[in-house]
Amino acid sequence: MCSSDLAELLQRAAHSMKGSVSNFGADGVYQAAFALEQMGRAGKLEAVEACIDRLQCALTHIRPALQELAEV
Image 1 (cartoon, rainbow, N blue to C red):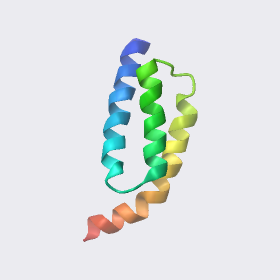
Image 2: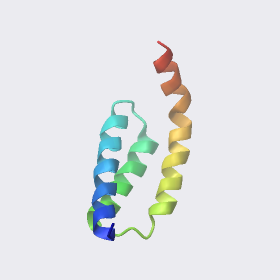
Image 3: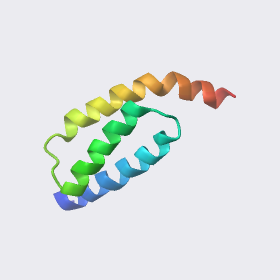
Image 4: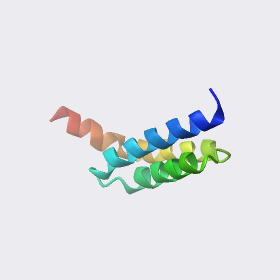
């Protein structure tokens, strides 16, 4: 797969995640997904790993709330 294909996949996946988490008010996740979406749209993937780390950290913070919602 070429880098432009990866960039497009990243852009679409990040856009979907951004839309999903906007319903939960998870600003940290939203901002990280937005940054990934912009990287994908621009085709500039150099900082993707650092941004994915930021996204994973933000997801860790909302995991307990999502698990609580799943139990309802």
